[in-house]
Image 1 (tube, rainbow, N blue to C red):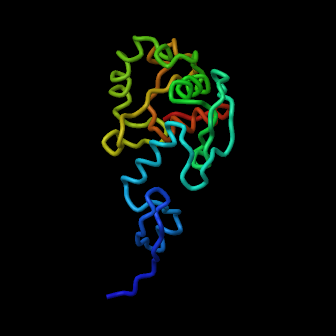
Image 2 (image 1 turned 30 degrees about the horizontal axis):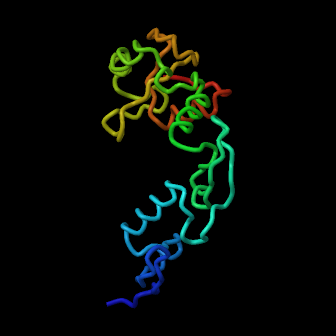
Image 3 (image 1 turned 60 degrees about the vertical axis):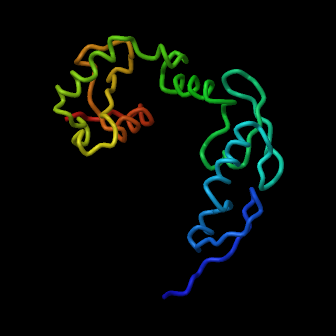
Length: 179
């Protein structure tokens, strides 16, 4: 039997001692169990102080509603902190993706009716990289070539995998050649 290379740590939520392997220590493990992680996450979501430092890192102003909210250190690694909550974050994402800012009005109703037809027309494959639908964990995306979400003509719609679709939106200044 091999020598254990971890060490005992103290859970920052409940104070219990627990054993952590070396890779868990390197990745920043601070809790003894999933239960303590859940309690800590729930506390942060309710605006309670973070257990590892006892106070919010800073107060920020939401980019959508101009409300002040507490920004915790744990959010910085996940690129959070521009919005006060899920509703504002959804609105901000919609605006960034070229929508109206109202997620439910981002696409007209006929878009949902035509998506499956476009996937079938494109043989259930990404038109950029060729990955088939059956190799994906989620459905292939439908992209508006001209960027106009109200233009749902088949010539303006193309099937893309999630990676190619994100790349298209991030690098919208570069033209992608479709197969």
